Length: 319
Ligand code: F6P
Image 1 (spheres, rainbow, N blue to C red):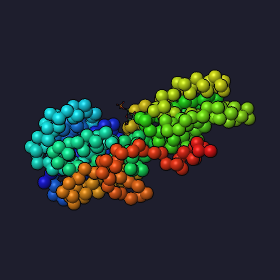
Image 2: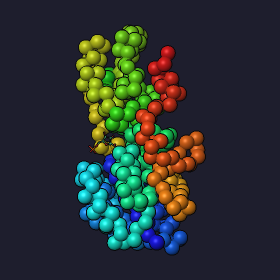
Image 3: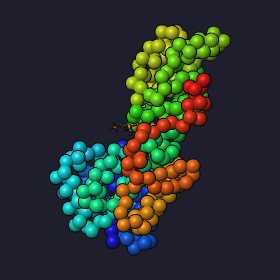
Image 4: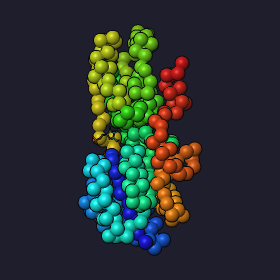
């Protein structure tokens, strides 16, 4: 019996601990572990290799993914999925674990419906934008990277009496921005989910600057596409020198946090057990209120992820 693991879409810290657990745990169960390198592209091209203990030694603290990842357009063509299926047949691989986001799960679901290769998706994206799970692998590490960098920016902002607009990742989702603004004590937070009331905010900021505020911080989600607009607005309306800092891909890297390592292990063990217990599986493992469970792909892709109300409330958005 053989199972394979692959990463698809944006890499996320925590993928390597999951890959390590996959190999260690399958060896214990006497199931052959395989790596599919380069995500769906590698599945098509057959870059598949049996995994050894030595491959995963010393990787638990490393960000990114040792088996690499990709975004594949070819996989949406039937002839390439056929090729991918034939590659798996060569190694008798009967089940897959896919670390990725909902786009990758959708692609795997299509593959499953055509060829019956069972799989479990492990939500892995720093964006935390997958419906049905409160947590995706990599989020805690990314949040800590953002927190550390914003803390540094605050040091220089306060020393130089400046405003800073910090743009954070998240694709169309404002989760990273919302949590980062909250824990960094940012004055302004702009996310795609909520209309930003400039008038109301301006009144508050003007009052604070009159009372002696000398610097400030605005966290802007990349999905709003308003970073430069917000900078202009702050400079013009508050007459405060303003700089932009786009954190970019540093948010995706770095050694996985303790939380991401532990959740990676649990996600992986439970995904393997699910595959062993079920003849068929096109499920995603999810984490809610401290518990793990499984959801169908239809459930996970049926709605858009919503930032929890308490987060929006604590940003004073819902006054
Ligand atoms: O989905 C993860 C993510 O880092 C997003 O936050 C970001 O919008 C995107 O990937 C960047 O993609 P790329 O690495 O292809 O530039």
